[in-house]
Length: 82
Image (tube, rainbow, N blue to C red; front, side, top):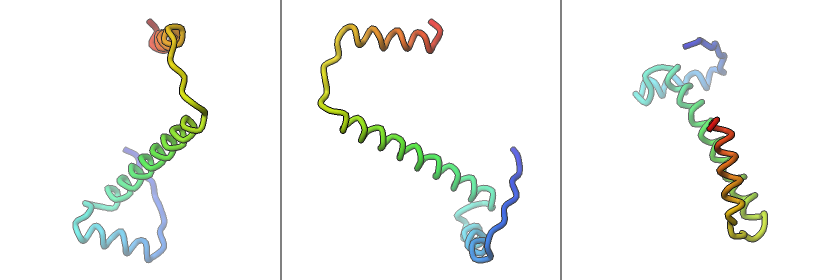
């Protein structure tokens, strides 16, 4: 694990220390680690939501053909090296 040094305004430092004191987190590292994890999850959800909206707005769905499925299988084989 690597270290990162950060500077916080006094009010934020006090807030983090209060969260640790209340037992919500074991230490500042745990607190910031959770913040990073939550931010990654939020960004992933935003990307998924964007893709879902794009899919919904792309027009009416069309039935998959045997040729469509074969293209998908070939793409998977290429990616997995099979």
